[in-house]
Image 1 (cartoon, each protein chain N blue to C red):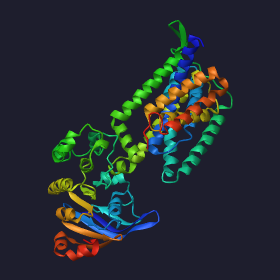
Image 2 (cartoon, rainbow over the protein chains, first blue to last red):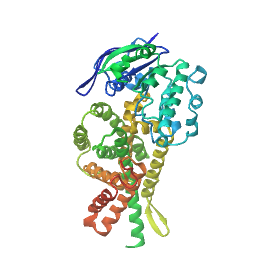
Image 3 (cartoon, rainbow over the protein chains, first blue to last red):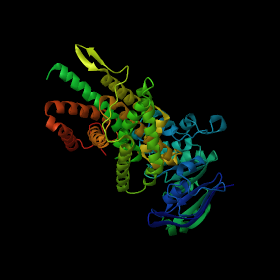
Amino acid sequence: MRLLEVQGINTYYGLSHILFDLSLEVYEGETVCLLGRNGVGKTTTLRSIMGLTPPRSGTIKLYGKEVRGKQPFEIARLGVGLVPEDRIIFPDLTVRENLEIAVKKGQKRKQDGGWTIEKIHRLFPVLEARDKQWGGTLSGGEQQMLTIARTLMGNPRLLLLDEPSEGLAPMVTRVIEEQILALKKEGLTILLSEQNSNFALNVSDRAYILEKGQIGWQGPIHELREKPEIMMTYLGV
Amino acid sequence: MTWEALAGQTLSGISVGMVLFLIAAGLSIIFGTLKVLNLAHGSLYMTGSFLCYGLTSLLSQIPGAYWWALLFAPILVAVLGGIIEIFLLRRIYDQEMLYQYILTFALILILGDACKFLFGVGYQTVAAPWPVNGKVFLWGLSFPVYNLFLIGCGLAVFLGLIVLMRYTALGRNVRAVTYNREMANALGINVPKVYTGVFMLGSYLAGLAGTLMPPMSVVALGSDMAVIIECFIIVVIGGLGSLPGAFLGAIILGLLNAFGIYIIPKLAVAFAFMLMIVVLIIRPWGLLGKPE
């Protein structure tokens, strides 16, 4: 089933045109990655879907329902969760409060398979140890885990991960990678952006390669592995 | 200076400081969360004081008229604040700061003229209500009960706000929106609703201050400008966005005014500004604020 359908969106920051008639789709249960060099519009694509930088034209449908023009909190309540590149942990909230804040009214509980603090602690044990600390006191890796955990607390059906491995030590990246694979196994649908192609190839089923605000190439991951010239052309790796 | 005068000035300084704290706290919370410097915050205070006068005279036949005014006037000011936020401020959040100043300055003129139109240009007074009228004698000195009542109110609101901000879901959401409104929005928090709520809370506090002040002072036009300037001084001294800072700044300013007018009346107004300048030089982020 098609969870997300982005059709011909054009997104601007002020006067500068960033995304040009960009289209992509994500099916339920898939992990899809957006690859591309710095500044090609990966973050803008995710922000457009979340409603933070609404496109001026085109359509964005969730389960067939148009969401373009809705406020971010409305899109969040429809089941989209964004983990931003710059993480944005609330420093004046404790680790627990950072998690609780994403819980929405009338949200699924544990018995219905929803996320709870206990379930989060099983996936990210370090957050249990940091429970009462202020969010601002965590290390980079812990912050990345808390950001993912915080978004999960809202029970998203579609998880948008913006460069999850950015700025993390290789060891920590591997931990995050395993956690993303665990989420994938649970059936969560994920759309992630990455510059670190190894990381993205390990966790994704399909890829879109962005170039200058447009889709330059799309296809399954095994094709990317088999044809290194594609990566060479678009990413220079 | 006699002991009696010393004690009297201290008490009156702190109690005026408490009223100023209520206004400054609202100004500070609104600025912290909405990033709007509400120049018309003093006008909300003045509107509250005129509503206090209006309601107490309207209900003068009913016993305890003042207490009804204390209940309703701040609520009316909060509703007025809600209307201002939803219909006016909401349109300019994405614009330059300059638009905020023009809009909130326009509100000073509009609310000032509305008070003039409805209540006239004269000075009005409101008597301290039973049972907080009269005087008490402590250690052989006499104190107006109303001043003690004000100090109690200020402390109660201070503690109430700290509990609200630190321990409730509402306070947690406000702290999150204050830090990053975009992220809070993306996590499913209805940010426009938080904005309206915070602006109404700040307006309520201004209205509460406006209702508490008249029995100790007068209800008059011009008090809007007088208090807004004092509140700016308070938040600069205490630290913009810091609740304990506003509390400390308000007490300092209250005492400074009370003793300044007693010792060198001609320089009374200047003391506050001199202190502000000193704080700005030594600690530009305020006594209890955080450096940017």
